[in-house]
Figure 1 (cartoon, rainbow, N blue to C red):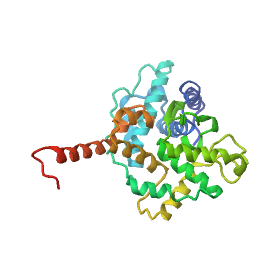
Figure 2: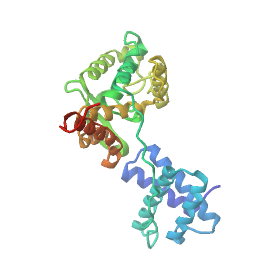
Figure 3: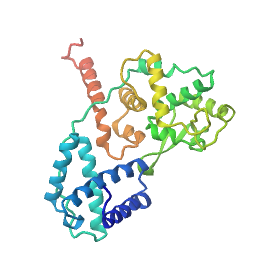
Figure 4: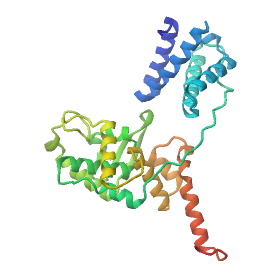
Length: 301
């Protein structure tokens, strides 16, 4: 169903605002667009426009969406889209009051991500054969994902100039175009440097990307996902793994080694510490182990 012209214009101006002013990623903007088109279709069916929307209107809409999607996480994303849009509409004088101010977030069960043990991780990293063209590339991919805790989108968007081989530093462009600096460990730095020295000769680059496919163009997220699945099977890992698994391993293994949560937050590029707190189970387990080992009234098992 196409939207009325006025609604489509309001939506287009908002999306342009997200691109030009907020600098949000294309994937994020697409999610906003999908959510808000759903809202506007709902309003159109009920012969309403955004000026008619009140808190109870949005409660009815969210109940309607809850029945359709059933996921608290997706519902929370819808609410975030509504808050952003109506906040913008209020700032622009399109509506007199912001109807999202008193809406509460749905409760989302916080799940602890599955991670590999250090032994499983090292086994996975050792699977690619660096003496072959694709093996050299794939070893660098795995080492950088685990060594820097990157999102797969951050990995595939890396350019050669984003790596400083003198200092072993990666410049990462994360969500919302935010820049962060992440150091590479010695092993990851050596593998990446070796790959970059041979990249041009091996892949005949057609695009300004670190990691390329056989055609010399940027490796896709799906391509990275497939190669990790393949090496996981080869390594005999029975857990379900993905590129994000190595990001979880990066954070978890740092905390196991004694890193503090704030440092891990900065390295992961989390804007809010609450996003990093899913890993606090690691610190809790470590404290319990230390308490059991060293408290004079404890009996180590």
